[in-house]
Length: 258
Image (cartoon, rainbow, N blue to C red; front, side):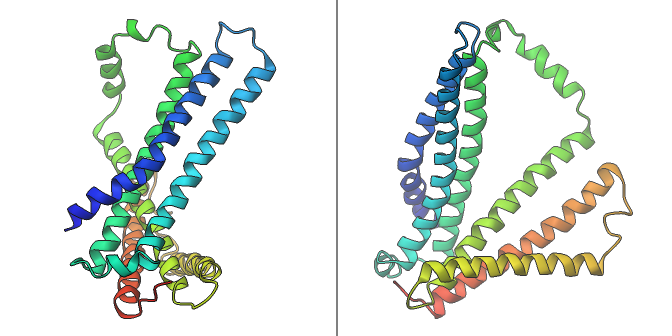
C-alpha cells in the first residue's frame, strides 16, 4: 500500500515544484548570458539577472518546505484527513509516504541547484569547449586520486545528509501533529512545538557531549570523522524514530482533525 501512496504523493508535489525548477533554470540561463563574454557587461542587466535568479532559488527552496508541510497537514490533519484515515492504510504508511516523498523532492531540489550552476557556467562561456573535453580521461584523472578511504568519506557525508534531512522532516511532522492537538491557533502551537523539539535536541547533544567529552578529540583525520559519523548517525536515528512514533501515537490515539 505504501507504493500506491507514493504514486500519488510524489506527483502531487511535482506538479507544483517542476514549473518552479523550469523557471529557476531559465533565470540561470539569463544570468549566464548576463555575465558572459558576448555581453557589454551592463551592470543593470547583471543586477536584474542576479536578483531574478536569487528570487527563483528562494522561491523553490521556500515552496518546497511549504508544500511538504501543507501536504502532511492538509491530507492527514485537515479536512482531507476524514477521507484518508478511513482508507485501509496504517498511520505508519501515511507518515512514511509523506516523509519519503519529501525526501525525494528535497534531493531533487539539490540536484536542480547543481543544474542551475552548470547552466550559468554553460551560458557564460565558462564551458564553451565542453564538447572538446575527453570525458573518459577527465573522470579517470579525478577518480585516480580517490582512494578507498576518500570514497568511504564521501559515502559517509552523503549518508549523513540523508539521515539529517530525514530527522528534520520528521521533526516538522511531529511539531505539526502536536500543534493539531490544540483546538485553536494550531499554527502557533506547532511553531512552539518545533522550537521545543529543537531545544530538546540541543539538550540531548549537550548531555551526550558531557557523558563522552573526549569522544571526538581522541581521534584524528578520517578516523576521527568515522567516529563522528557513527555517533551522529546513531543520534539522528534515535531522534527520527522518536519523532516518527510520536506522530504515529498521536495520529492513532489522539487524532484531532481541524
